[in-house]
Image (cartoon, rainbow over all chains, first blue to last red; front, side):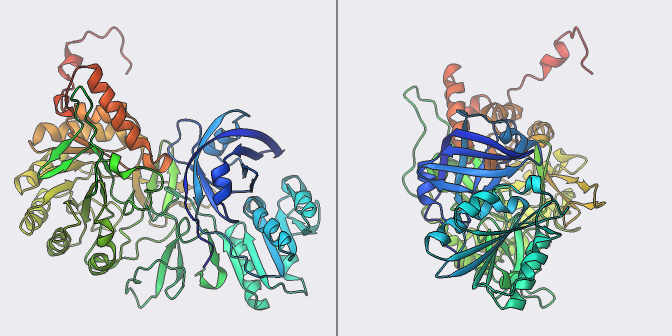
Length: 274
Length: 327
């Protein structure tokens, strides 16, 4: 289904720049020319925190051009706090690009729905679509205007930007899916990344609109490369994305689990079991 | 197997280890369930520079595994509750095993089951394949409701399972023990007497985490197996206790992240080590550990790891007069 990584590797990269876009929202740019060459929109990296943490952090690749890549993340715990404390000139190790990204195909009118930190996984897709001449509408939701980062950048890149905030501080007051669900111009393709309830709502709207949707899922990863089976989601047994394992015959179920890190993180909405 | 990179330097320092009939060029195994089939990690580490991969456990019938979420990161470790998801032995033999034919390291199959017959059946089918160099007998999965650890918690059942698998293959059998028992040494003795060639010490430690906002367990299975640095002292003690109880080699495992950690296990009595959770942070850790072990031996004019196995001087603590008590 989605575009597979041609290959992946471990990269040791210098931090080139660091910006705090909002309190607790950090954009880290680093030099990783090989990673940039290999990345397709929607893929992620496993970043090793500077010290003493027993797991890497999975982050969507936000930017990838001219040798520089970046990740955009919210500080939510110790590991992301350590990444946020990095400074220009520090060295980080990361593995990637990993997972399967978005399939953009020949879509001409695309709606991108992003919730919160989900914005970090959709910029490359938006750029590629605009470059290909597609109309791109971004529906972007966050708790408040403060954490609604980078919306001007999407506008600069040629996206139509529609925003929603939980507290009503800017744009639609309420969920971004309410805003998107109201459109009377169904796109030919929907891409989405954000919290699970948002993705569930996008899947329902896509079904009502009869428009294909690709959802980028977030799960807790351990290995990030398909080795541990810790990050699975249930798919229909007939799904093209299901790993080629036979579904166990249990209660007549045809559910199979697919690994978010390996078969995903991008899945077709109709193949997911909610 | 393909060409190997033997890590023997000009001074004759040799990192190879023999476990039963299994010869490892490096003392580093990759823990079952953590490393897939090895191919997932191949882009990130030279498999010719590790001792071997212990494959994910396989059962007689396909298993869906536990509901999600299956992972929680915890202080200095992680809880997992995968629940032995696997395609079952028939599919595994038809589709998976052939992938291991040309691996430049040892390939160790892992057998799990819910009856003595299951273990014997899966063990025989798996061991019959030339691609599999040895078997790990997983009698200690903590994530299978009521059944998984039963074998590892009962010396008689342990012996029955090991005898049954021993009866169907001459390949090296490594029996993986649980830390979730009162007396691991007695289980180890039974496994040895029943024909185990080596013991893997330890599997994960049972644990639980609760979401205080939602007032519910953070794992779909409620409980899970704790791995990572958090369990290292528990594992070192288990290796030490088992080493005093048996004569067969021990594969030490539980939170090994550095060469220094590996040395603790070797000095406690392990002949080889297995790395699991640390691979998730950096897949190249096993290669670095092997290189540092070699340096450690060189600096002490030692020629092999066997010279340090079980050499922790535990009499020292009793003889030493402490000036202070750290409690």
